[in-house]
Image (cartoon, rainbow, N blue to C red):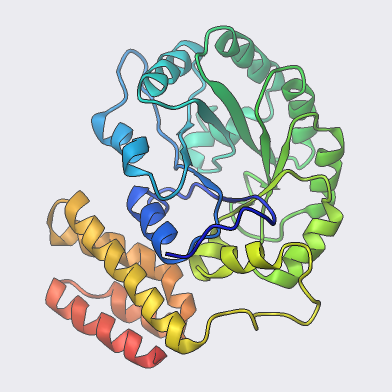
Length: 332
């Protein structure tokens, strides 16, 4: 296992639904390291119902020993929010994250996630109710806005009135989804007016760009990384080791040599495959989940499109295993 360095920037694994689950987090911690903690993909509590056992297992501290994991809730109902917080408290969690950033139309269109950002008064009402009753600490993850990129300013003004552990900003609007370029200039403005520890999220993909971000957002308390780490799993440890002294021409020179990189990636893959084999029911679900993982993992190979296409087309485990051997033969 790679060691997680205690120095250097605070790095947080982003919540990516269907990808960064407990199997992924534990395999990542074992094979690569670099992250200080993770925020889990959101749990969606239902009014009048307890969280499902399978949801609680995803964030069970005993199953997340390799990487400290903060549960995330997606809801716009204050009492449902409180009920879920008590459940998570009973399960051993001292902190929970509130999702105000999910851009999915099915979520935001119903006034949840990023769909709440145009309504700062409603956010204020929910936080006032919940924080008066919650047994745990609360952090919040937001975007620049749902449709308008300056909606976050009124939201941060509301957040400043409440007791929160931190605020994470994904520097895109909900309508942008994950396209376009993260708006670092607006993130600078948000950092300047946010009274809570501020975590930046968006387009952290290589050491040089990260060094520039650290200079522009010098007061940031942490850095949340999603797709950059999924496509280049060694990235967090490289950023940890580099800290504030990444040279302008360093690029990817800090990547492990192929003799190390290939076996470590293969170990990671095998841990995912074996782990999902235990969590999921039947080979169909297993291969679908691995195809989703390969859409990111393939970027570690010379021809990502060819690798992702071949692995994604496998319909039985035997064919899949052969394709995996072929893929890693290309790397070595």
